[in-house]
Length: 470
Image (cartoon, rainbow, N blue to C red; front, side, top):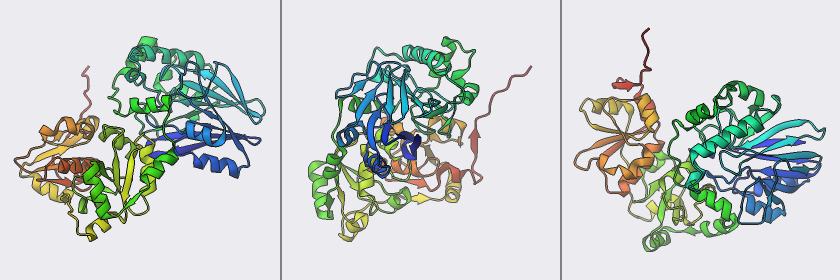
């Protein structure tokens, strides 16, 4: 038996590939399924099952395409009501994958259908648990996401279910089991996940705050629900796509993989009014871009920021990418349900510029230049998260988190210049492109962001942990 974690860092997602005696099961696959099919063929095996731990919110799963292309059976845990052919398993049901076994353990809490899969090897030894969003390394799944789809499923109610699932279903299992979660650090499905992506259950019992044996249900609820941030707006839409179904990725690629020369690109942009999305790195975008385009670079948490910053999941999109990054951009958009790419700029921005088309740019300054300007008391706007800002920030700066920029545009002055920055330059360039699109022009971005500013003598305000005098 082989059980492999397939981790995709840009969305902090883990799928799993289980093979035994010529049969394969895939757990929580990504939207692009060909790599799983290729791997099974290389192993001389057939994909028998696609196991889903729950209806995912942060990405669109590849279960439908994988089942269609391989004939595999899609499996969900108890209470799931998918809008397509699938096997809804009973609690305790066992599936054979070659000479290995997969046992269903219903663990509601993150969602009502959430299920953990216990993997048992050929010798009958319990090997590990594929926990989905029920149990992470250092954390557990947030219980407030399902409420955005089904109003009656309040976060307090789901937190109670999760407490019972952990205490009655997970914690009694053997300490030597390996925990295989669906996400790692960086995912919005939890609040304090470890950067590690596997661990033993025994170590999690000792170190995970949610598995403390002396914790009451009310204490668990309070600790779990405190500090939860508002989930990204695309989450409920991804859940519905995973429940109801979606277009094949092949169809999406055929529609989006359409090269347009600069003249044709301009005609489509003017006539169809799509969003022009530029996926080049921030420092490249700053030097020159198509007016009114928005920059979200592929080189960081692209899918998450697409979901945060593009409110309409059905928005039609024209792409400007680095040469050779067109297909990757389309695939990574589809991972979070943005399926309406309608073409890309053939030859990239260089072709646009060579055609003599209008261009725009973003002015940037170094941290040293920022330190000089800071003495003149400029308006400084920090687009990092509130928690980052509260930890440490430039004295006198205004905090407008990037994901709230559209609701707080009035914070950006139009009658005087200002400076914008984030932690390293990625998020502030997204902000800069949006500001440019909305008519702001008299501002500069700090190259290297707060990380570079900290190396100067600019005054900063740091959070000081309060102490109690005895």
